[in-house]
Length: 427
Image: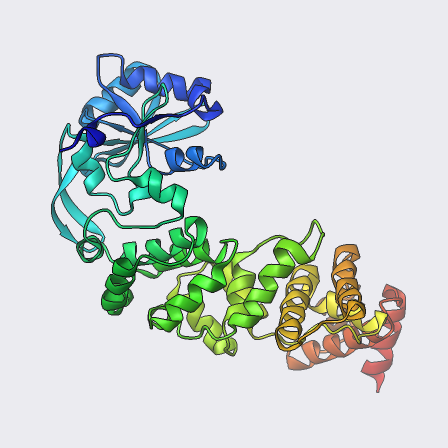
């Protein structure tokens, strides 16, 4: 073991997340009886890059039962979120800290592993997936980098810790994490040895749960340039194992451009479900199958089907009345998303989009932003009140009146709609 593995290699400047009262309280509780703690993983990596910190993970050589006792003694709520693997969540003042005991793998099988606790920091780092995730930092800012993660971070290299095949065999999810982290932190070219291991192990991806695949895919889709990485995955025959419907790479590239740089609209931000719908080529049944496979929520499923297999597509040639009718039927959010996807599709097949075209498409988005929902003034009970018996005819009449109301640009009030209904019922 070299000195570089066990000695600090740098100093992190004071960070607000490190000096926050909640962080200080958790660190003080864990070190109250002499234990050493270090921040680990993503918070250290992103602090080095001066990126926003999302989660604060802490490593300690104390076993989880002792961690719980120390936290509770300090009045900090402790949740045994993964105690069999050494993980306890500390909660104070609404902030969550994942505290994990140093460990080494005794036996691995898929997503699970039988671990042994240790006091060896390097041994713990050796079981992590990527070098850029195997960074430690003391509460005073000293950085420990046992596997040259800092150099990789600076060079935009995404590498596995140790042998890539072994890392992926331990946990196939690491294959997807490799591409996700490259999309957010890497610069070409991809590590050749890692790419070969991913290619050879790709056929194991269907063994992962839909939730796990979805989590990585969603994060990859939110990268600044997901298409370049997705194309590599497609070329290496990796992406078809998790998303065989992926086909519209050019359209997605244009959508990403519109979301990130082509528009200056508060309502348009990178969105993973919109990007997923833009990427796939399928029908409503196929979109539902994707949603089921990825275990999307009910809301996400509805949205994916609506965007991947739309019942109508906003078009700049629409009249103002047609726009309002479409906005009423599908809602402003779907209208906006479908306009963006359609615009991206147009840009993908057009060598030189004209400025006038951009203005026309932008007007659709502005119409969605300005839309104030209107409510159809009649209900099924209004038809029943005329003596029409319950049954299919009630829905048919209600639909016919609503279409008439839409064609009149929503100007007819309740009395006008009732008059039209009585006329229809009489005929």
